[in-house]
Length: 68
Image (cartoon, rainbow, N blue to C red):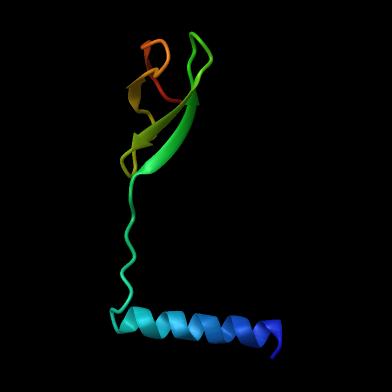
């Protein structure tokens, strides 16, 4: 079986399962990796779908800031 045939078979199976409602696709929150502007620590911030700038406090120094 060629790669193209395998791709087409996989797409067909996915399409059929979505039509039968056997698979549910959900969109969740976005994880943003942000660096603290004061101490330089890495922070993981969760943002709701569609929002790009989220306020957070640094986990190391507690500095309040907004993601870019």
